[in-house]
Amino acid sequence: MAERNDGRTPWYVREAESEEDTAAFAAALAEKAEPGSVLALDGDLGAGKTRFAQAFAAALGVPGTVNSPTFTIIKEYEGGRLPFYHMDVYRLSLEEADELGLDEYFMGEGVTLVEWASLIEPILPPERLHIVLEHTGPTSRRLRCRPVGGRYGEWCLQLGLTPEEDAES
Ligand SMILES: Nc1ncnc2c1ncn2[C@@H]1O[C@H](COP(=O)(O)OP(=O)(O)O)[C@@H](O)[C@H]1O
Ligand SMILES: [Mg+2]
Image 1 (cartoon, rainbow, N blue to C red):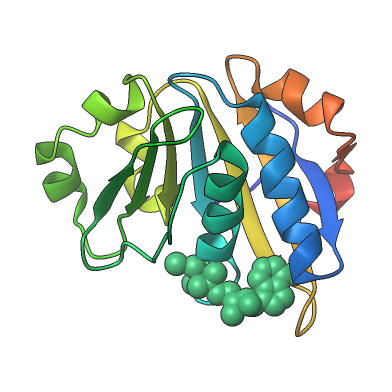
Image 2: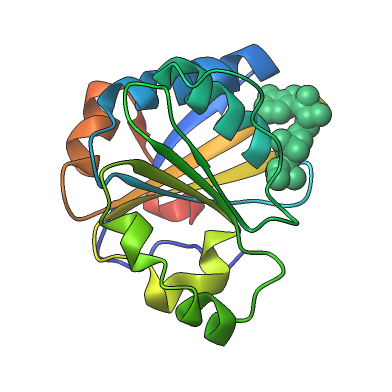
């Protein structure tokens, strides 16, 4: 994954010991979300991006089932505290993503969660929270967060995340 410390913004780390732990962290983030919030998720297949999105949506109060949007690319959910825009850009070229006009979502009334976000890094909005999910075991994950702009740095501190040692990245 290309998402490493670029020397400008720190990474914060949260070890998730179980699937429930990942879900609890996603729910805590959902409580912070406001119109225009953008979560940029990365991580290998099966790392838990969609699972994270499901817990995030549930905590927003989105009714019904949130599925992987791999084939639909973008799904909009209403009915929660905020509209929830769930994207999976794995199948898109940067050019195709650009043509979709994703800014409408990024700057909309809802909160956007993008799976495989690093693939469209150049067209992500200037303020977003990167979250990289890494396998550390069959049911454990390391959640590495990098706030870029906005209030995301505050969120990380308020959620009790640990700044990552430079040596690790
Ligand atoms: N700690 C964990 N956090 C997230 N998912 C987990 C965890 N432990 C096990 N899993 C499982 O890993 C899988 C993650 O799948 P999914 O969310 O679809 O991944 P992705 O969207 O990153 O490809 C799910 O089957 C989930 O039950
Ligand atoms: Mg997925």
